[in-house]
Image 1 (cartoon, rainbow, N blue to C red):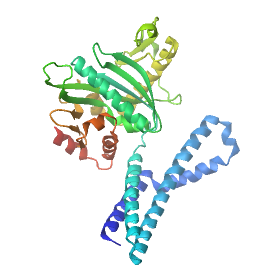
Image 2: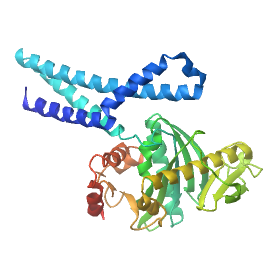
Image 3: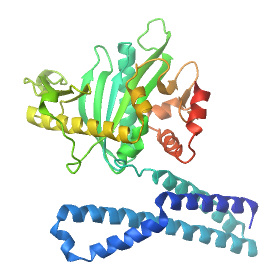
Image 4: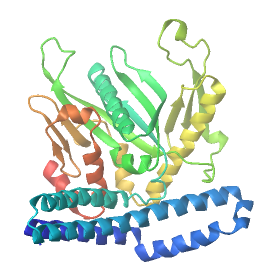
Amino acid sequence: MRAETESLAGEIRESLALLRRHLDWDNARRRLDELNAYAEDPNIWNDPDRAQELMKERQHLDTQIKTVQQFDQELEDAIELESLGEAEEDADSITEAQDALRDLKARVQKMEIESLLSGEADANDAYLEVNAGAGGTEAQDWAHMLRRMYVRWAESQGYKVEQIAETEGEEAGIKSATLRISGHNAYGWLKSESGVHRLVRISPFDSQARRHTSFASVWVYPVIDDRIEIEILDKDVRVDTFRSSGAGGQHVNTTDSAVRLTHIPTGIVVGCQSGRSQHQNRAQAWDMLRARLYERELKRREEEAQATADQKSDIGWGNQLRSYVLQPYQMVKDVRTGVERTDSKKVLDGDITEFLEAALAQKVAPGQDDENAEAGA
């Protein structure tokens, strides 16, 4: 076996071993056997909700186990193909085998990252809020750019994107916006994006073409279903109604259909204006409030008090999660992971998967985030 092939095969075997550990391989296979037995019991459908939950778990485990087994087989097939190529002095077969190994390595590593999405709410849909920082038009235009970036990324992943609320800027951009991003693992992928995002560029709104620094914050929290009980007392919530901001002309709403809820004990504020009636917007806003309180409880249980404090800090200097520099050079740098990109336009067009993967991968190598944070300070 050639040295390059041996190295690739070794890296793939190591990644497969890590993947099995992340999946808790032996227990996963035992659990799948149990679920297969449940599936053969006709009485399971006496409780349709429970049955659907078990079948969903069964399908997920079955897919993961079969994928790992397929990776094992592809690895052996590629090694065998190269051995045959060497024996027959067939350069094309050797090249084909090495290309197959490189492709397999990338797919195994991607699944290894996805296996980290095992948190209580990681598989859920996500709400994503963008809020402009201080700075008027500059910050509001930056918030608009950020929202566009997340919409482009979500659409590239096959997720459904729905705008729940928006407050437009006075001259350009937005003051705030809330999106619902729907699809498997949407929250798991996006939860690391909560924080302050910093933009450096030559301002298109400055007649003297000076360089400006703008800030906007992002907050991501999971959409939760009715099975999760979150108690909210009516006396703890202030309900405000207001006129939805429309596109102008005949599209402007003439009734106070938009709804804003303020949870007084925590200070959490949510709003919805996407529905056609106040009733629809009120129901959506209550779902969002339940989700925010659930996310708050998740953070408490995970002992991420410092992370929560960071989210509530000022949207400004010293608190940024990621910096996007457009002038005088091109650079996007994640302060936590140290990942850097020089194709800023491509990133702002939604190519952020590398940043999301790096944030998840820190769970594989704990402690690395502290070193990167120091390097980016």
